[in-house]
Image (cartoon, rainbow, N blue to C red; front, top):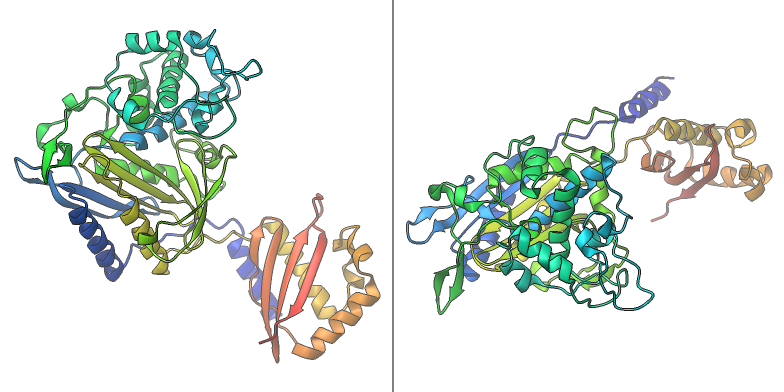
Length: 498
């Protein structure tokens, strides 16, 4: 009886488990991260950078390296302000989702419903479908990729953009055929935000996201930044740093105009990560947690690629573009979200490990420096430390009940008394006699099994488990039926052998 009570108490502790409070990286891990990032900075001729590590909603590590201003020799700090270029797209994507939540737009509506200048555009073929709002989010609108061109259009005025939209643009392909990255597409999303909200895009983002999150040092107009805090943008040219021209705030800010500090950006990262895991506590953020989790929903144009060799051991990754984020499945890290920012004078990278509660970012002040390798290596180091495991799926009430049924079947050596907890297919797949003989054979091999171990859920309807028995071990799995009453549709036991 004591053992059974112990098991029940353990299971109850797991039901509805809140996200665990994770530890900060240990000193050795932080030192290795610091070393690899500083080496990369020197090798890449980056004047200055700042990196941050967010764990369980807190900025647990932040460090500036190098200088934010070559002439004044001001060192980079956690308050130095960098332009983050295309990492700005995450704000635009979430703004669209927030407006959708408010019932003000539909992701599957034609974009021209919200941008009248797009009406009458000439599409590539007679049977082309019109561009949807979702297509712009997923980069599948058919536009040509435009990184260098789009970057230099940052200061474009509203009137100039209106004229561009009215004139129409050429297509690389029909909408919905393939993913091709488009800054113009995200600038168009910015226009949708303005038209639907009735506010200037930058004002909407500031009021709906930045201020509620306490990002008071973040904005779009660099002319308003205190000179002493600005990270000046440089390019590496002719073995020296050449200052890039400062670009004013404009309509292409929706694709890349945000300027922020490490302290502020950590608030944004923490907010995004707060969407995981799903839970019952109150929603208190600028958007619902369920909406945050939508940013991983991709365009269904996945591709496979080898992880960059300089980051570590070979690994074949699967990747797709979602909503302002690339979603990657990695053999060591698991699932992560990432985006870079390349811009005249700046380069940045962010990675979110939502299933581990970890975020990492690097902001630099060198043109297109692209710190993807050190960011990935830092993530690999954190994962390798073992201090940041993927969050376990909590044991649902249904799985706990199903596990009790599985344990009672093993203890009885029969399914006969468990029939009320068996789905209609269960005995069709294997009858009572075969269950009895199979159980007797396995029990003879391993002996009595206290079965005090907690199950390892795969979902709220399925779990694996391993038992240590008298002279052997049992591995098992259970799968519940899609019925209101808890019932096993499948149960498996297996004797583990060396």
